[in-house]
Every structure is written in C-alpha cells, then in structure tokens.
Image 1 (cartoon, rainbow, N blue to C red):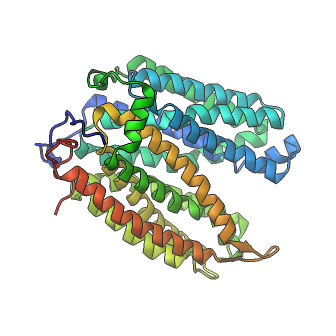
Image 2: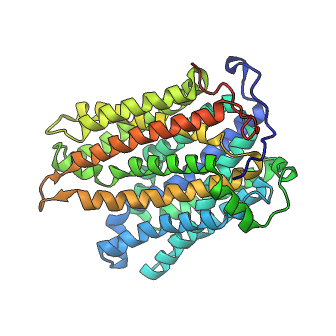
Image 3: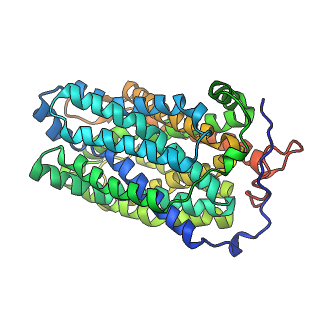
Length: 432
C-alpha cells in the first residue's frame, strides 16, 4: 500500500480570508465552459433521438447502443490512460484529449450512417473520458482545499446550463438544419475554448517533480491497491449508481404517474435547470465556509426525504412537482459537490491524474450499471403507469446511507494528519 507523503501543508489560513486570484477565476471559467461542451455533447443525443432514428432508419435498440457506446468508451479510456496521466504536463494532456474529443464530435457532425455514427460516438467517448478527469486534476493542483467547493460549484452549474441553454438551442438547430448541426456547433465553440486554453492556460507540471521513476503499469497498480484511494473509488461508484438510477425514467414517471402533459415537461426541466444553476455555486460556497462533510450530510438527508416523496407521487400539479424536483436537485448537488471536494483531497499530488482517471471510469461504468438495474426493477404497462418506481427510490435511499458512512471515513482520512504524512492537505476540512 502506498504511503507517499503529500507535499501540501495543512491550511493555515482561515477560509474567510481566502479569495480567488484573477488567474484562478480565469481557470474556473474556462474549465466550466469546457465541461459545458462535454456535457452538452453527451446529453443532447437522447433528445435528438426522434430525429436520428428515422434519419438513419435504425431501431430503438440500435439507438440505445449509440448512446451507451459513448459511456463505455469513456470508462475504458479513463482506466487505460490512468497509468500515464501523471507523467505529462496536465495542460498538454488536456489539450491533446480535448482536440480528440472535438475530432470525434466533428465525425458525429458529418455522420450519415448508423455504423459511422457508432464509430464517431466511440471516438468521442474515448477522448472525453480523459478530459473530465484531467480537468478535475487541474482543479486539485491549482486550488487550495478551502476554495475547491466554490470551484466545483461553478463547474457543476455548467451541467445545468447545458440543459437550460444548450439543449433548446441544439433542438432548434436540428429542426432547421438537421440532427448533425448541433455537433458542428459544439466543434466551433470547442475550437475557441481550445485556443484560449492553448494561449492563456499556464503549464500544470509541478507534479512531475514529485513523480518517482515507475512504469505506467506499476503506477496504475499502486493507485488501485492503495487502501485510502479504494475508499474514494467505492464512494464514487455508489454515488454514481444512486445518481443515475432514476434518470432514465423520470420523464416517463412524470407523464404516466404524476400526470403532467408532454408540453409541461420543458417547463419542468427549465425550472429545475435554472434552480440548479443558481444553487450549485451557493452550495459550493457553503461547502467551503460551513464544512464539506456537513454539506454532504445535509445533501444525503435532503436526498433521502425528497426521493421518498418523489418516487411515490400520484397525480400532482406542475408547480408542486417542480418544487419537489428542485429540492431533490439541491440534495443531489450537495452530495456531488461536497464529495468531489472530499475525494479530491485523497490522492497525493503525484497520483492525482491516475486517481481522477480511475474515478471517472468508475463513474461511467456505474452509470451504466444503474441503468441496467433500473430497467430490471421498473415495469410499465402498455401506455400505462410505471410500477416499482418507489423500489428504485428505496434502493437510492440505501446507497445514500452507505455513501454517507463511506464519506465519513473519507472525511477522517483527509481531516486528520496521519503520522505517515500520506495526507497533509486537509486538516480542518470538517468543522466540528
């Protein structure tokens, strides 16, 4: 088990006295915008299904394979590159894989057949799976622990922005110029982001001075077998399973069980998306000021309460449903943001790239596992309501309780300096 000491010292400055420098604000903004393009590319394929399926003359099962190919490719690439992730300047690594992501997106923009689109989504996923992990490694390298909550909050807000802003624009472009058009839009926006990164982002290479002379395979193995890292991997996997379990059936449940009209769904997603954009940065700030584990525990409690209510709803007005979903999103985002900050303090600087790559792979695979579990549990009558959706809610409550215990152990690992010095970065992360 690796016990290499971190070179970071426990924070000696009170959170309230820390502030972002101008360069840190730039890094936060550019990484958030980069995440916006990644998430939009991933999310918009499902809404485009109504156009893609008839255009390419494919079946729903073939379309499902197109969607899942991206996720599995991203999971595989993150794992395969973990051993190399700490051997390069993170800025160069980010640029290389982001350009690969844009190349795959461009292939989606010119795809004219099912086989070509399948190949294009695989290429896009292979590169995108690494971009996200490198981005979070950069955040961990450049921001002290007491500021990471705010950074993670801004980045998480970009996820909501992709739904609120990106998807409606993408659907509008598709209706006018065909389903390929949104992918070409992402390529154009992404090329500008890549140019900004190439021009203004400074090298991120301090970790290279700490890296011992090890083979990539040995580095991967050491990262996998380190006990404290395994704790983070387990928590990440369970968080992802719980988070993705309800997602595939939320729209169907809201229509068939809650009784919302199809025309009301865009309003529901607009309300919840805007609320998430506004609350995510506030949650990040609360994580920095009030204590990260406290925010995570609050998110768990909120998630358990609102999931139990939401998955048992009957006929409910739009306003009430929207309020319930907004509160549920607050719980989910509190867990995501706080857990991202806590687990970011686990890896030593020389292991951050590998740790983040493996963690990203686990997230992708866990999302696929969650979809499979949900499909086995939920039953739908022909054009009728969903059955056993409440069982999914109960499973999510169970995974939430387990992750609360796991994150408590993670919090202890990063908050209490060990004699071996394996952590050193986060004394005082948990207040009280």
